[in-house]
Length: 193
Image (cartoon, rainbow, N blue to C red; front, side, top):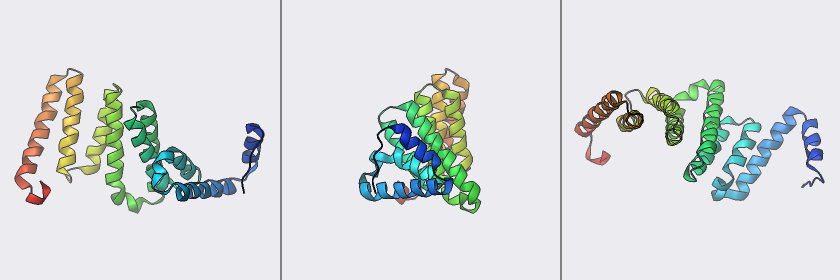
């Protein structure tokens, strides 16, 4: 059934009148219908899907679509919007992990990826301290388990220090990235290259 409202106020009154459980079901159903309609083109409406999944209390799917919407905004150099979308993605995944803490290991990589992308956008926006904090979150997620990621993140942190003209810190981070990279080269198999 489709409804058209003569004025947005009527729509708002009806929406506010719905009980919370019904509203949650409506949002989840709306998200699933939109997803089935758009199929492979769901990236076009990722922010709408994210909002419906969030309000439909499905934080794992909300995370997925906030992340996708953030990627879209980042590609368009809409840095403020990308920042907000990535932060929403992180918030949704944290909410999901509060309900299902045993799933944390399987989400570490996705969470680290969003923190890195958020750091990239913040760095482009000139918010260097916040970008470094996001990169530090990535390092804490991997802690010696993924050398290529660690190498890349230390290089990004070094670049921020260099941009801020704090050369001592930049050199320290570049040296660490170089050390990790040389270890990576020594231990790499032909398949990894």
